[in-house]
Image (tube, rainbow, N blue to C red):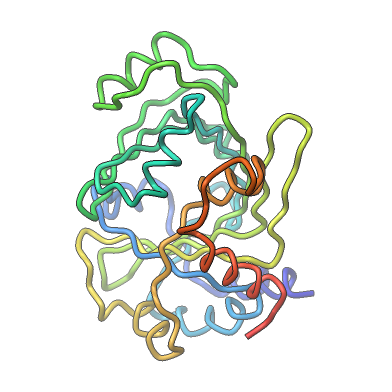
Length: 255
């Protein structure tokens, strides 16, 4: 029932196409502010956004599916850098937009609170990195060699574009993670991400979150996936314990 409500609510938003969004609010270098919610919270919030945001629509689809392959080395250096709160760190992934059948190799470089994303178009999710793709990754400054596939994730995303603010707002829902034959599903969890050229706290969504006493929540889908798939006994996660507890409460509708 909540998911059908969600689909009904998003039909009320004015649409924006991909070309128009990319020309106006591409935000490849930006500041990201994340929040965590559950589906019931999202359904309550969405009607308040109708006058401030347009919804991304691609070929008639407003709730598209994504699949990503994350690459790291055998030591899980990218994960460890995040756990250590290293201020200069990378993330390497292939991402596919399922309905439009478009895929990219993306390198995200986070440094001093800003995220710079570089990407190239690829044919599909490869499962293994080619020499050409590896050369691109190295050209962006990634210090690691011998990158390999460490997990795959899938989710659905609603993307909004600010009407009067240069920002994008995404809601990731139906998250699942895969490695070999293992699958972890994070039902009921919603990860919201506000993408801005610089932090502007009078953003309509930021103001709604503040009014509801929902604070920004630093979170990485990649890190959650590593912990869930590799097991708490195999990776360090002590700095993420409070975050994992919060996530579990939201998934179970516990205040």
